[in-house]
Image 1: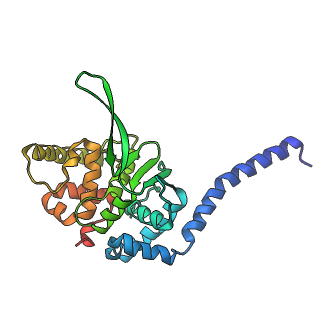
Image 2: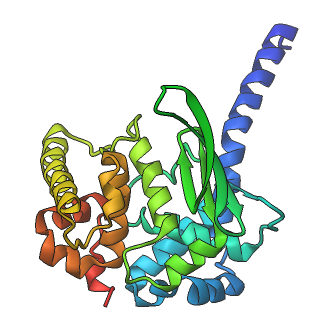
Length: 273
């Protein structure tokens, strides 16, 4: 008969195995569940680009949405009640960035905070005398490196329903999360090898500087001039353009389009009119 120490050790090992296996089992169950009909209706209503996507990408998107909803916690702010409509709509935007990619579902991201509409944030800056001054301004979304994304529900809906203007706050903020997966939010997401990273740096640096010069001259640009803020914002902005205005980007910025197509592993020009 095993002694007490042996029994204790076996119990600890079994407990550790169970603690590791149980979340994976729960995830497997969640992903294998049929995609609810109510969720399909939500996609058709609030994420109409879904109907234009090839069947294989539609199936991938639905699977990833189920996993995303299972793994992330949605929190309503300013009195907003979180519903399945909100979960599915927001998850669709996030998961569109993950199609055809052998990657986790933004594992560092834990919480999605949703406000009814644009919300106020506090910022501190220095006045002309060098003293800190606190001020507030309205924003549509934010992405933090501590596992949080904050979104305006009203603007998520607007961005999804007008999927041809290059402006989509949900895509923008979730692109920041992908950027941060490399360890820093700096416009250089994890690419896997040095050759790709060097090519990416060359192309995006050149495009970033071109946008800054165009903004300085007051030229019209396909890419939103907010991308001149810094390289991280440039990556998020060109991601919006890539998914919403791919044909225009391919025509006007072919090298940039090629890099984003290789990174995201999809070609939206096949399904965006």
